[in-house]
Image (tube, rainbow, N blue to C red; front, side, top):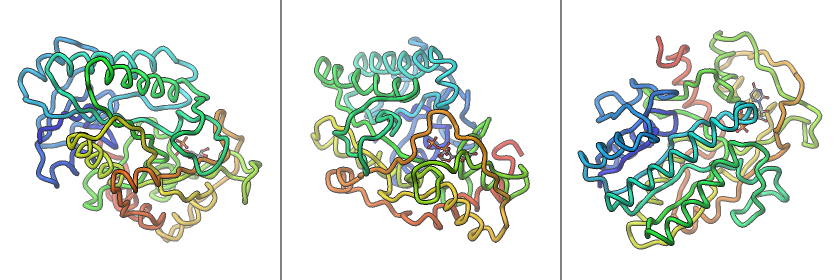
Length: 328
Ligand code: UDP
């Protein structure tokens, strides 16, 4: 099938593109390159432009017979979303409204949408199930939850079938070492730890060690980016086979504390990565762990990278070869 990957030059999007190609599908990539990297999708059909531009979207859908859409195009910095919520509501919600409009106009009936664990906010219980309360604690999570609701109404009105995938902590890199994580600024734990390992930064700051967890640091569920990609393709196939619109969590169901992640990274890299305890970061829940039983049972998802060591090995392969990311 021919899949339009919006945000396909970004971190998760570029791994999705690779996965689609590995499975003999055709891809058309749309990215405004605000945070994406052209070189992550070299040789592929890339339209550079913004989803909020209706004429541009019309051109992409007219020039290509698209069978389905996977949408990763969004701003995703939690802290920035708190200080600049309108940027998030405009880019993350308005863009999907335009995209759904173009899909409806051009008769495209399937979309897989990149959602987030941030839709839950502070969890009521662990592991988090899809039916649990959604009460985002930041505009980023709010924007993704709003889109999930918009998708529901567009399914009813236009018959556009959707799957929303709520990711926990995306990490790792393609096993081929050619694509990986490169954000500017980088805020995510594993790339920051590996930048400290490769000497790009001096040390890593552990944001708080006074949480109510086993060692006081926050616990997260780390899921490999290629496993996320495989779940998207399964979700798309399920929709094409007549599956109804649904929401799934994607995580490994296992939590690691920040201190444990640093320890595993020291072991994998063989480098004594310097770490220092700092103040808590605003808005961080103590523990976020997914129940992914629904994705495993209903999508037939089989995450391959379910050990943190392997995940960090793949990330280290990318970071050690590309210490400055794509801009070498
Ligand atoms: N974290 C940290 N130091 C850093 C970056 C992150 O201690 O330099 C912690 C952060 O407080 C959280 C965990 O690592 O508990 C994962 O953060 P990340 O930003 O990677 O993902 P998030 O959980 O915010 O989606």
